[in-house]
Image 1 (cartoon, helix red, strand yellow):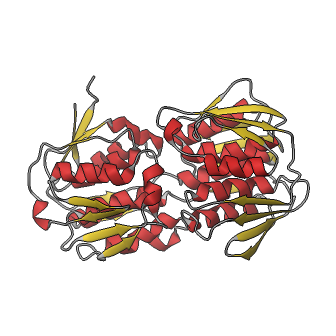
Image 2 (cartoon, rainbow, N blue to C red):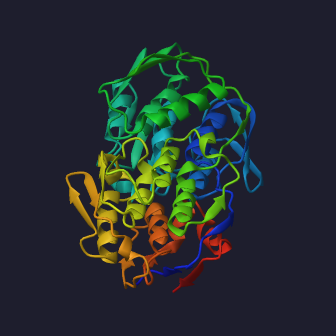
Length: 418
């Protein structure tokens, strides 16, 4: 059965207007979990309502947390300070953030919790986090090293130290840091290697934890001491999503337009905001771009690089291979579908040949998104310059940016759904 497609018709003019990006997915899911672990009622404003945050909020409801949604950007969360055993398995779709954060958090649940997801999630590794929990005395198992995962918790942690290899994903580190505040005594969280997938996301986690009353001391570049404070309820404003903003910045650059996001570029605290500096250089982007600290922005930058004046090599992309899909391969396939030879892969590096003459051409490229929201959104940018690009499964953007297609149409872009 063929999937639905959307074709973006090149507007042939600068895109201009005002667009309010959705709330940050990363911050919303952190705040939802911490509010659920806190005693009392928290109000989260500016939040993202999408598939990912829906999976997180529903899982928390299954564990006894009351969550009300009085308007499209607000969650009101009332918790007792602890999660209860759910009646059934927690189904989390392909929400990697939710799966990893909850796998650690449910270690404090007195009982068994099963966490599962869709077919894509069942291919996403979680072994290092399970290893860390088992080393701390928590029963945590997975037959494949990917979800489904079974965790049998016994209440507050009774360990002095948690160790984790954060090289594959910073979410493992964040998950343990948030768990550590629920110990019976202070817990040191330490990296077993020097690398973290994206250190900026750990900083986001620490900021969110402190807002909810946690006391965290940074010992050095690879260890933290977290006091046994638990969490307290608070009102927490959530900033716009920087990953979503990258599509708007790139659309502005590609069309020589002017899009007002309603927030200053330097107001973002999320790591993907670093991409704005690279986008601002277009069509003279850097020859080499390190993707390790702004992973979700790399698809945007890779498509933009296709229209750059000179080739761009993207490095440190190993973590992109274990996202919603293998994004290195998906970018390679999609770029070469638009123009053979446009991209090559060397190890985990992606080389984009760059060809400004692509603008104004016509193709019959069919982009397999692998149900990955970022593949759909980034290749829509190519459609602003090249006619005929068909993007499969346009509804997958609901994972983090449900209004994405409406946003483009609001800027005057014609879309053809089939």
